[in-house]
Image 1 (cartoon, protein in one colour):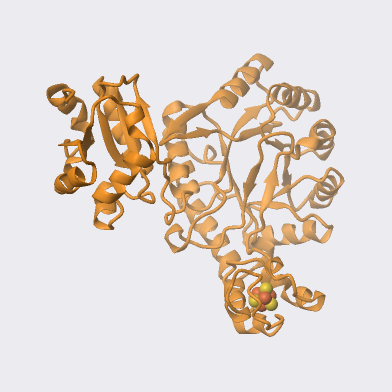
Image 2: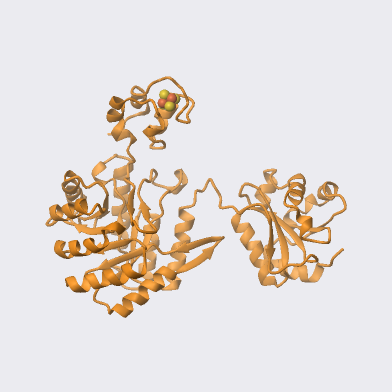
Length: 451
Ligand code: SF4
């Protein structure tokens, strides 16, 4: 059972020294009880207290790391059921399944596609995260060949999938330094798979399709041998079964503090569906609830881009909007006679405006004002995008070094700022632009002339 804040408080030094970042020991204890702080933040906590508080200080869902030579996938350590309660911290990793029955050329081609895949969204590069190499051939040589083809071309994290412990060990001998996820320990091989996980210091997936009791039983068996990094596969494959089972697992870990099921989850959205579209829908469902490692069977651009975008949206802290830096940005190849427009530093606003300037074919300078990530109207209403702040940004970013005119185009939504801005920026002409970014191109073509 989780300890209450008061129970935790009894074990703390009670000096209120603030070294933990909280004003009092009681405030720290309350935060610890909510899993919002780490016990290690208190430098004076005694060894006795550490032991007593161990359960309270451990995250309810263990953080598990896969990969060792390059990029890592880190999943787990989530503390809420719903993103709006706080935030989600560790985005699920998308790994693409490679079948060892495929020809080496096809595997090599797929590895290149996955490794090179990148798309940009609001200034962030989105990528895929790794490979799940599946021993569908049940043949050791074919599995080792596939592992070699993948490992020789990519340092992305691996999931090794084989039912045969001997085949798994042969692959681990070649890849242990890359810390692959071993898939999977089951009721009938838990001991030997756990032994491999300990010997090669790799995380271990546990497969228990016979219900959560069975899954917890196998987890108990492998963790009793000393394995700490576990990933769960409850075997739920259909839409309803997946959302129900994965939600149950999250609730048991967070609300009941049930340690045996307090681990991230691996999912296989391509199993139990009948089309690529359904696989994409299932993967999307599992991004939201509550996949940790999501094994994709297909790599259609129309499927991957929305999934990466969905993941980015859900795993962005809602209290910290994505922002761009305050600066003067050249859009296209502007000259000293080109327009200077101003907007806020909320990423979506910036990229909408920049995109419309670019597609409008009228190269311009874009001054971004730091509004703490708020969009134009919200920032104006909050007093973060007023005449004084815009004028300060014009001067702080030395906008005049880019232009030979003294005209500034402001968003049509804040036309009310025009008079004040002309007072703040003596000698400047303030031009009221369109209300919607989509009209910027035509507005500039019709109205821009150097004054
Ligand atoms: S660092 Fe420890 S002793 Fe100091 S206020 Fe925090 S909990 Fe109390």
